[in-house]
Image (tube, rainbow, N blue to C red; front, top):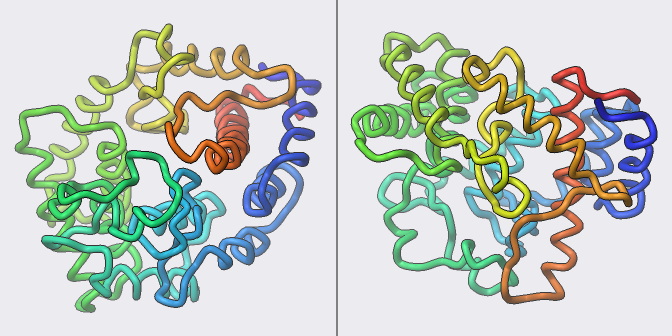
Length: 309
């Protein structure tokens, strides 16, 4: 259980270091702030084409729109419970995703060429390999398009076609799925279940395959969690009612304990990766990530009944 004193340490750290977006998220979760406050600040990261950039994902300082930065915006909208398909921000995101910008071979790209013009982590550098994209973030974005597009519309068809292809490939591939791509398949599954699309894909087979992949992907060697960027349970599920919680109860218990034990004296958590280049910019991004990690950790502890404040 995180104590009240520890909560106050984290709160003070957030107040000193968080950028306005994360401050609004903090207020939304813990201090009576509104979803509109988050949306108002999130708008400053959105471009005229409807996509998002401007280091919304803190490891890439490209101001131009990209599918991955836009995926991050969708995560924040989900976090604050915005589900209205007619909302102007959702409609503009749909317009961007349907435009074909940031797509190659019928999928949204993980990285875009203009990333190379700005400070970034090495994994955000664009190369020719990005012209043959996988399903990070395409699987999740396809689900978003189906959820928010009118049946028969171009947006709905784009999402529907990508989703169908994604599920078929996922069910028939022999190799394991990388954890970020797996998270996108989980999001697609959740959209399809919400929309009751059992007749479109084999939801039961999809569910069983996802459970198998989640169980294989979570890093079970707890000693690696502090030193490496690896897949902890919360990377793939964050609620006790998740279909992935059963069988992983002890690992989630270990993660909740790990979160409490690894809190620094100043009220923050360490970032377990580095860029290698752009040291000055990464020093800024590190703080942004710490704020995000702090909010995510407290929400996780709260949802599992481990937070007093």
